[in-house]
Image 1 (cartoon, one colour):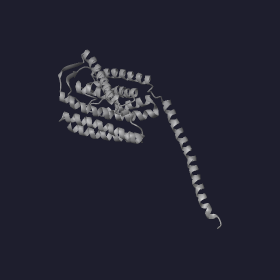
Image 2 (cartoon, rainbow, N blue to C red):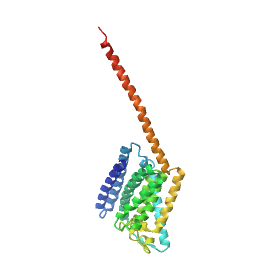
Image 3 (cartoon, rainbow, N blue to C red):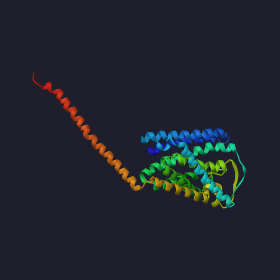
Image 4 (cartoon, one colour):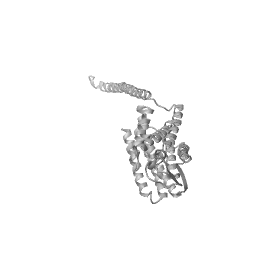
Length: 311
């Protein structure tokens, strides 16, 4: 039940924020910037609130302490990986930078991409992956949420089956692995934002089949669709799949080194321990209740005894 409540609360905030952003995006980049950042902040607060209420624990995965450096590191990784894709395409003649683009357009995209990165990471890594992993272990949860994340992008205007599969491998792998390696949501949020902003806000590329963007640079991609991604954008390029797969591997190696990978067997054992602990706690409470009841009965008997004596 907690997964339903958490998804509903975060999705409701994300949907409301998305509607407001859509209403101002075409007319006012600065307002888009402000609304996007506000929507991201509200989604984080909503996530922290519903997880605290439903799981009765500190929400350490979005703790304020250490958030800024984690976000910065993640953003650098995202920009760097996308930059490698662009470099590979450009050196092979498939990509060309034609000139300067729009600074104000890029500013608006900061807010838009921040809201998208935060809400998607909260839903797919913060809620779905984390809770599925508790029951199935890391690998099944990673595969399941990658498929869901790819399928989610099929709703985009210029989505393709290959594009959705590419996103499942790229983002479903890299972003989930970033969460596993760090066990906080700030790094994957940063990676997600860095990748999306590099694509749209810097190189003016289509992001996941969502149409053209006006970023800092005017660019053109030409060549086979498998190489350039076609209308889906550079996320549909085999080079994106390759470089994101390498980043995924690096994060998973770090996760293994830190002992952050969770096996299915460990999940089963931990659930069994929790159930045994709950049963033991229940048994320990019963004798205590019986003793308390016995003392109450004894006290009542002693109080009533004098009244039964003959006068």
